[in-house]
Image: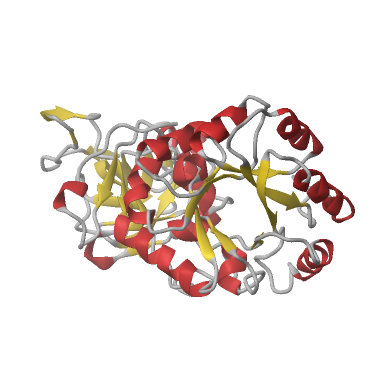
Length: 403
């Protein structure tokens, strides 16, 4: 077994304001593509031309970083999220439009910040109405009353919905009540029919704007007609909300995150040689593998087994063996030019116009694209790639990350 780690000098990522200083002594980085984000927002608008669009940026913009995506998504009609600190970050970036707290207040004192920042918020339980009734404010609140239409997470039952609406409508603390639900099965044909029927019946004759459609429903045209707001989440970030039924090419979406690294060594294996902890992979013939600088401490899923797709210099191959904390192995058979220093695309846009959809990686790992995006570790440097019409100053390293 022969190891080889000879490689050309690999450029490192500089820390902003400190030329020549490296963020980490490793070649891994994540890229956030502004052009793709703007494109995907336009696709959501095209799917719901008569509705306004919430850009959902919860979980730190699905792992992309709120500050990273904001310039590309500020054309949205509003931003929806969960965390009050994330709402403060949006206001600090001079966003003066609507911000919606998708789970509402978690305790009474949250309402003070809602008043101060002008946040709209969901009401999904009686306790939240009680808090509002006791809240002293000079600024009346805009709330979204949520109905549980079958997801059975949050919201009032259809039978209790109208009573909750009447309680809110009687409060001087409330300015306007919007009506919303969340479909559990919008990603399958006909899956939201019963939920929409229940919502329509429960809200009949009630005054208020409507919001029903998440990404899957918006792209499929479910709950869009008559809606005032749609909530674009995962579709904004280039993952198909109904995968594997459809991929992002079907929905004309573009990948917004690329996770890439380089090979740092190669190994020549003889038949019977094993790879990685637990010797879960055994070579059946002489073969060559490469060792990539990425592991589960970077957010790559440890449970991604042999066969998970990966690109080497833009050519598709597979992982072999168990993912380690800082490294993983890839099959280099059929790739004679690949070696230490070769570019590895874990997902997203590769060299020479190649692509590896995040959904394909997620499926091989037994998970979904959402989890992969959100799991990218803070130690991975993240860089914004500006859209062609943005100023060159946007395409800079952004080492500071939240969460």
